[in-house]
Image (cartoon, rainbow, N blue to C red; front, side, top):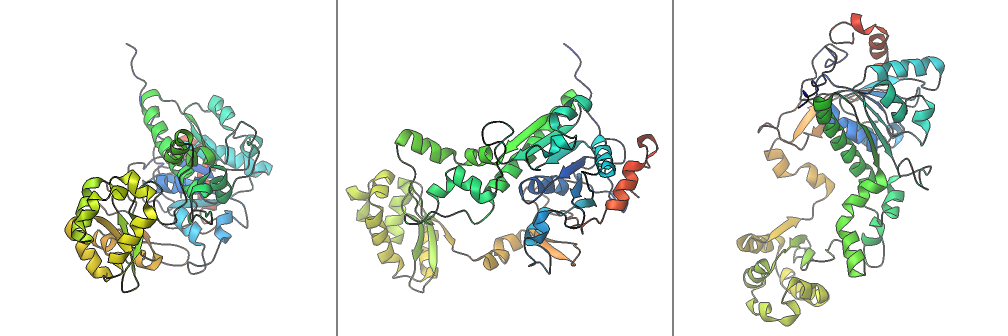
Length: 413
């Protein structure tokens, strides 16, 4: 059998930051260059930065990533930008000018990973198209993120989150029976970013075996399409799409918010007939309902949802939220409180698990969630700063202008 290819190892010293300190983490030593805007690509690269990769973010001179201007709610900074760009180095570069493009190409020459979600065709025009780079730097991993992919009739279309939610059919199954609604987060961008992140990790693993990079392509439509899987199967083979049910569930009942005597709502979630029997006995105090043919199985309960919900509301409206929760806990029925975003920020479970940590920014210390994967039982993580626009330009360009064989260990000054 042929000998396995020796694992790829980044150039020595690439794991340090501009101040010379080690980033640490499982991806320390990895250099990621990203030409990114808005949400999808920045979401992917921030995950890499949280794992210790050195992420060099190329921004347009003067204005930077357009997400910097989305709002001013975080002490004058954009909430989107703070969320998506922690731990990165910001470099202002006019990549269309001859000198800026030369600097860009030099940065790409030192990268392990190149990520871009530029307008269709822009990377090729800049000389950093993934096909060209695959020939020039076979060990480089490239990740192209777009709305609809690099081929097909939609390849030139601009794509924003709402538009992709509409194209993927998500709006058709989200909202109330009367009104379709978008998801309240940039879900198409986020899922594309997650597939880019997992794809890059897969490519890094593959490169340790082969020494060769991989060309990755992620489209928002295809990423969100994967998340639409159950709804697509339900529709293709059932003949009708899942109904829009507000905060309820199209195929499970009882499921969703129910009002209580004190004006609150408790979210119920029953998954099987065993839970239904326990619910009837211990929560509704109506064990005979298990014999009612309208509610005999989940499919029956869905068909008779309106009648079922009316029966359940009779009980919940007679109880306070605390009394209802006591009954649900006693019957081991899944439930949740209908929290506001402010209440989520103060959630006792997150606080008990130490999931909030401070990090620096141009507007001072902020709090953010620790990355959600707990490694080896440890929840502590070093959350690195959010960069000011162009904060690292001089240091990074000095590093890239230093001949590689003479670059000081650590690369940046």
